[in-house]
Image (cartoon, rainbow, N blue to C red; front, side, top):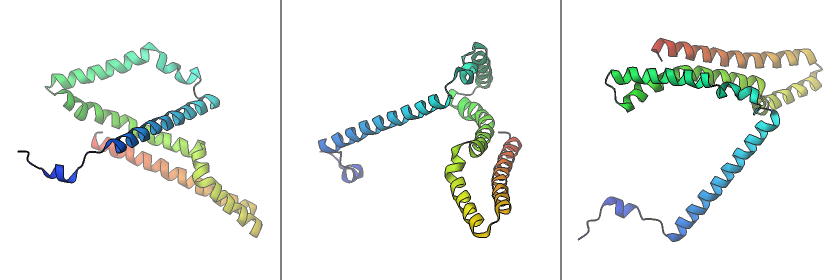
Length: 175
């Protein structure tokens, strides 16, 4: 006699039609993601981001040797303390990676905001359109552009201060 569990009552396995639909949707999603990745790589190529001058640093054996020796030494030290592999990663390697990666990621966010079209897409068009309307209505070119520049400087300053505070807090906590 088969016992019925709550799982058997609440969950019915998908039939052949739903399995086909799921497989089709998965294949379509993978093709879409591959096309998106190809477009991104193409855009990197067009803008020169795949130039060897940006990637030569990672091709040097000394770079990989340095990184490998540092990681191997850290792992040996943690293993010599009697930690298991999972503990080494969760208590030693991952916190150190966070300590070094998070400030760099925030610095990259500041760069993205300052130098790329992200700022243009998010803020620039609206703010500049409003500035043009104000200039045409009040004939105040210099004051309007001065206020717009102060707004952008303030946004970048606040983002920079947030990154400094986050880095300081990470150092205080020992991350």
